[in-house]
Length: 592
Image 1 (cartoon, helix red, strand yellow):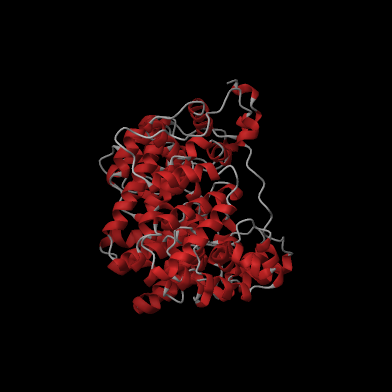
Image 2 (image 1 turned 90 degrees about the vertical axis):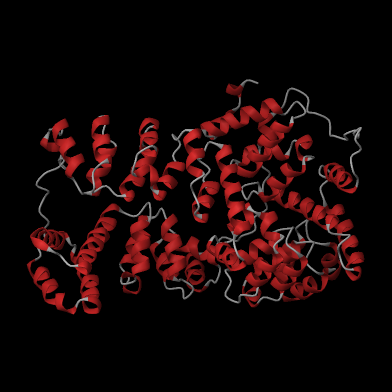
């Protein structure tokens, strides 16, 4: 295979190019069990649509059930391919549960299974038939002849094989006025999160004033936000400025603007000291120093805190505010902030700063210092916090990453563990050791979401840990985990979540449930019929046509519920669904 003749490889990352080479080498032959496991891991974890398309267009891989199911569950699989694979998965689920279905539903389910099979594309029918035969009969000890599709012949046109199919446009481009109105009134959590991170300031402001914006939602958006202007918008609104959970979310966000994070950190340190009392001359000096560094915009929050918690300190706050210098003094020591001065800091000065500094920017600079001695010294600085360390880890080389992982203090810190797992330089051995110590559901989900992690074994270990944690939870804890993950647990643990009908029934009975979770359940072809029926009767359904559409496209939705929902759609929505090849035949007959 002449890789240099493949232009699309330039679009792939280095790790994806390695995955492509492995897939291209395996494709012409019948895979071993180990190779099937590798392909399944790629189908479940990769985010590159070209590679996922290549896997989906290799029939002798799809006859291995876990590979087909992994592709259907991966949200990065191109939409047209994923829809077809989901249809196949729904057919397997219907056939598997046919014997256990109530007698009154067996005839309906049999008709539904026939209709689903007829809707499958021609290239999938032999694959589905092969898997259904394996499901219907036991393999004799002597074995059965495998009815596998023919192996591909050389040479292959890799450009065509890996080119994702074009998806039909499903969303109309909105004008700015329509987006403003939508941002201020939408009830869709995913849509609202998107509006909050828009580049246009007016749209962000409209979304911030949407009554559906809660502390929990805003905190989750800030944690993943890459737009620094949103942080300033939130901080500038009195509605959010005085709320401690929002201030904590801004301070804890990995991509929060450094000046804003520094302002909040000084305030946190000052209030913590005042709460416990500044004892002795050194304590008073430190409190005075923090007051001197306090930003003018933070005095409102400090004053409110003093009114609530320490009224006797109001006079002190006023004195410092009256004496506050409008222009900050430059730092007496430290690295020069003016390159025009024409002098690099000496090694002695950098060592001194690494040992004594408490300024976040200086600590991060010391962690990145070219001299390894400075790096070793700053790790022992008592002023170093996990925030500075996690900010520096993505830019550190492998030697420093490994040193942090084995450090007597930072090697035991859970926040540092999570940051190290997302470093592209962490070794596989170290990553596997760290993932075994992670017990936080959110952290495990972050590992599964991160497409930059090069080790598939690490993602598999994270998935196994997440599965074990979910199975060990009580029903209430499972509901909390599903709500806090926004339904991502359904994507990564479909078998465990969708077979847990008790938890799903209690989850769906909540009238304030996040619509994105209902959308995931309505779309998944393995969701139990009873749960689909309850979603069809959920009060949120009336305000969310995407949930209605997914219920109608799901062949397991009970016929009565489908007919009732079909009558609730507008003519344009019905016409849009009629263009989909996955709409059940029953609804097509009604429309005609």
